[in-house]
Length: 432
Image (tube, rainbow, N blue to C red; front, side, top):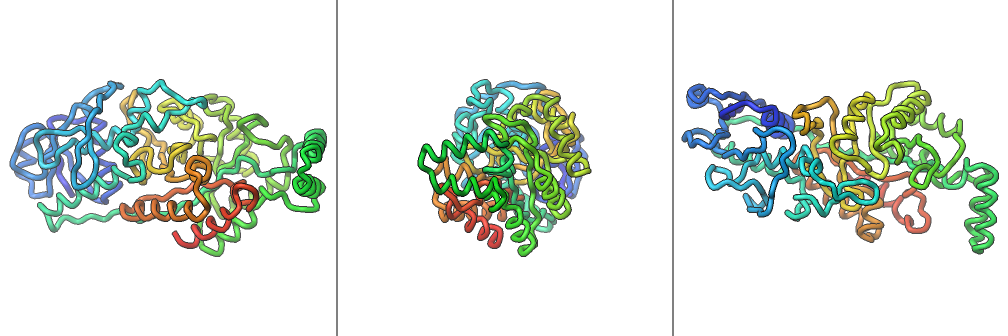
């Protein structure tokens, strides 16, 4: 048990203390605003106030955790502490920055509430983030701060006991397109076959024709491989299923398939199957609920997990929408064009609505890396991608976080630009 003193209570302070002490370091804390009680306590202690009390570890607060609503923060300079970049620097204190405010700012994605400079898909841009300017996107920096705080507490209190969580590896598959060729309808398939011939793509013509005639399995429909791999390695898979309409940024098949529905039901017997809302459902609650209900009818059970298609979301609107639709777990927090830790942490955390100034029941599971990012944004070879994935995994293992990897079934085809990626995916599952 750790006792924390502050001049006043705050829901923001209580939230971040729970994230740092209980969720990350595995130690309970007791909060008090009674100075005499704090000084008299024999427990390991943290003084979170502007007054030096000559007791415990002293952290001088910024104003962020005691303010309400959104006040844009001017973060123009950075310092270093124990080798880590930090902000909200303080001139006094045993730690040279307000660790709790900085952690709150990153985990809640406070800065995303203030941004109006979005990309063409309506997404917050990595280049605008504090973590980009600090140059530490590849580090679970909040978790690292927490463990550095633990070291300082142990210096003062060698007998203090911590019981941190365990490292978890969570491979996830986004099923944007279960088929490359099938279920597009006679007219569209005929047009595609003609186009293949006109372009003299005879190998594609042959594959397409054999596939639509059911003389060959569609190369995107590789769920048997995934289920066998997970079974051999004793791994639980997480599958996010697109149920939206046909469209430019949505699914590329037209007609539903009974075989596909049966496969999804079979997958859900042993693994987690969640919703992957369509591009148009990202900011449309009625469309989201429609797609969620359709998937629930296929699986004959409630859907409580989600990941946004195109990683298209905004704080706080998207997460309020998820809550209203009965979603309890979201896996969307990752940049589409940059691997690493968007919220500075690898440990799941409750969505905190900064505008409403309250913690919610929606748990955000931050993902670390996506296949498409490694290939198309960083032009990595399969082996380079595997090494980067393993490097990130070790950083998460060091802080006992959850290492969540995002691949697509369409990336595991061993064709065109994805040659070699199925092999490294197998190695990843075996090695991490």
